[in-house]
Image 1 (cartoon, rainbow, N blue to C red):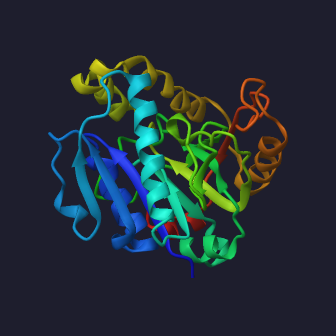
Image 2 (cartoon, rainbow, N blue to C red):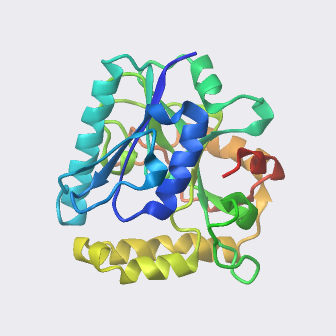
Length: 279
C-alpha cells in the first residue's frame, strides 16, 4: 500500500473541515492529514486531534493574490511531504472529497495504490447543487449524500488533485503548471461548496470574505443550484463515461492543460450506492 497524505487550507470553515477530517481520516488515517488554517487568529478545533493542524500567517488580503499565495504554499508543503517519505499527496479544498465509485469495492488508499501515477491523476468533477422545492436546507446532523442527490458534471472541479511528484498547482488546484492531466476511471471529486442556497447567502454576508472580494464569486457559483433545479437529471453512469472522454479530448484554447467540455450542461442524479461512503 502506498503512503498517502492529504493537505488543505481553510479559514472560518469548520462546517466543511469537520467533514474533511472525518472522511480523509477514515480513508487515509488522521496522522496523514495536514491542515493549515489561514491566519494566526484561527483556532484549531478539537475535531483536528490526531492530525497535523496549525494556524499560519494569513496569506494575502485580496482574492487573486491570496489564492496564488495559498496554492504556492500548499504546493511547497506537498513537495516536502513527497520528499520525506510519502508516495502520493492529495491536495483539495475543505469542501472537496476525492472518492472511489463504491462499485469498485476499494478504499481510496487501495484504489490510488493500484494506479501507476507519474506526476498526477485527476478525478472527474461532480459539483453538487440543491434542487429547490425538493431538497431543504442542509443540516449537519445527517450525511450530505442523504440530503443532496443532484449535481453538475463540469470541468471546473476536474482537478489534478493527486500528485506523485513535486509540482506547482495553479489557483484552486485547477491545473498543474507545465504538466498535462489524466482523468482516472471511477474516481470522482465531489464538491459541496455551493450546494445550499442559505449557506451561499450567509457567505455573501460574511465580512471576512467580502473584504477579500469573494461576494461576486460566491453569487456566481449559485448558478449550479439554478441548473440542478431547472434541468432534467440524466443517468450518472452513462454521462460520467461521456464526460470523462469529452474532458480528456477537449481543451480550452487559453489553457491546454485544463479540461474542456464544449460548454455542455450535464445534470445527473447520484446513484444510491454512493451513500455507503458516509459523506
